[in-house]
Length: 491
Image 1 (cartoon, rainbow, N blue to C red):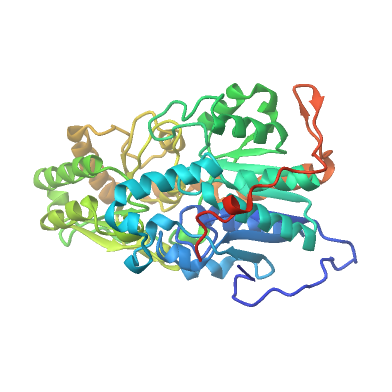
Image 2 (cartoon, one colour):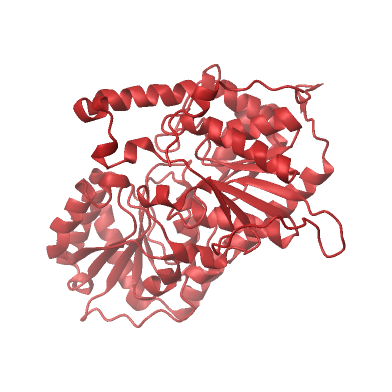
C-alpha cells in the first residue's frame, strides 16, 4: 500500500496540531472512488474531504490504487486539481479480480470454465462479507483503519458506500477502539434503487449487518427523500440520524459564458454527458424518437446528438451493445465522443444547444447530473420514469420538456419541444433556470452537512442508545482468520 497527498508527494509524519498548538480532530474517510478515479462519486467524495479540511480537520482518505481504476472505470487526473493538498490518501493494493485481462494470470479453472470460476469467486467473496465483488476486501480494509488510528488517533470515521464492505472496517474500528462513525449510503443498501422495493430482508446476513451498523452510527447520509423515508420506516429508532445530503453540482462544471447562438440551418446540437449505464432497450427508444423527430421537424433536420461519457467497465469498456447502437445511428447525426475530463466539462456544455437526460431507475434514483444539467440554463429532454426523483428536482424548471417514461411518441414531441425552446427561450427564462439550480451547488450542500456531522461527532458521547440500552464497544474484538483477510487481494 502507499500513502501520498493528492499532488503525488509522499506524506510525512507531520505534527497534527493547528496554529494555536491544539491537536486537530482527525477523520478517516473510507472513500473508494476518490480522485483520480473517473467515477461519478468522486465529486461528492472530493467535496466532503475538502470541507472537513476547511473546518480544520486532518483527513486521511482510504481508497484503492490508481492502477485498479485503470482497468475498471478509468482515470481523470484533472479531478485532483481541486483536492486540498493537505489531505492524505492511502491507496490499498486492492483490485477486482474479475476485471483482470492478462490471461497469463488466469487460473486453470478460469481459463477452462470461466462461468464456474466466476460463480465460485462470488461465493468466496460473500462468505467473507455479504457483498459480491468486494466482500473479500474486508480484511485489508479493517487492518488499514486500525493501523491509521494507531499512528494518528481518529475522532471520526466516515464510510462512503459502495462498496458496503467499508462498513465492516467502520465496525472494526468502533468495536476495537470506540471511534464513532457515520455512513454515507448515497443510494442505500437495502433498497433496490433501480427496480424499486427491498434488496434483502432484515433477517438476512446483509440485513443483520445493516441494522448493526445503523444502530450505532452517528449519522446516515442519503441522496434523496424517498431513500430517507425507507430508512426511517425500516429503522424508526434511528430516524433522527437519517439526513438527506443531495449530490449537487460544481460551479466550475457549467459554462460561465452566455449560451451560444442557435443556428438550425447549420444544425442544433443536443448532448448527453454522463455514465452510459442504461439498457439497450432504453437507448433504442431514445434513438428511434430522435430519428423520427428529425424527420418531422425542420428545426431538427440537420441536428446532431452527441453522447459523451463512460460506457462499460474493464474489458467491456466501449465494446458492447450500447456502443453498437450508437455507431448504427451515425446516419441520424448521432455520435459518441468518449469520456470528458473534469476540466473540460464546462466547455463541453458550452458547445451544446439542449441536453438529453437519460436515467435508469425510478423514485429512489436522483443522479448527480440532473443538478449540473439545470445549472447550464439549457433546455432539457428527460428520458426516465415519470415517478423519478429527478422529476421532483426538475419540477418548476421553465425549459424542461417533462418526463414521459419510454413512450416513444411522446419522446418525439419532447425533442421537438426542446428544439423550439432552443430558438425561442428568452434570457429571462434562462436566468430562471439557473436560479432554479442555485440552491444545489455541491459546495453549499456539503458545507452544511459536514459542519453538522463534525459538530455532532465531537460533542456526542461515543455510545449511542440502541432501543433504550447503551451498548459499549468490546475490549477485545473478533479477528478474522488471516487466510480470509487476504482472500481476493491483488496488487
